[in-house]
Length: 107
Image 1 (cartoon, rainbow, N blue to C red):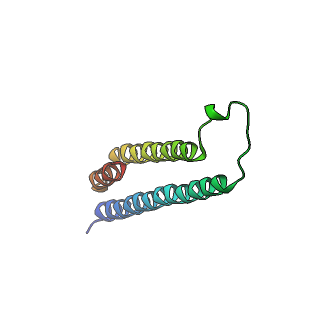
Image 2: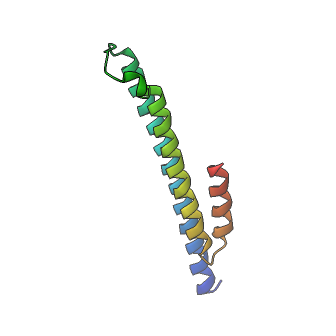
């Protein structure tokens, strides 16, 4: 095995490690935010009801939480898309694998 093959192989391994770590981090971000929102909604639902002017115009805690989670999921999807585009620019064998993995995760 020549030095070029060794460098390419090591680069492929490093890229795959980065993609895998990025996926784990993004999955953790979504999971942690879901738990935080669930806890916040539960606490808000247990709080005493207070009459506020125009309270009927405000979203409920559950609606606000759902909107926030939607934002987090879209941000994670953008991150996955960005990562797959960056990896696709690399001249390695990992690019196709990373793109496929990011596309599956975005769905």
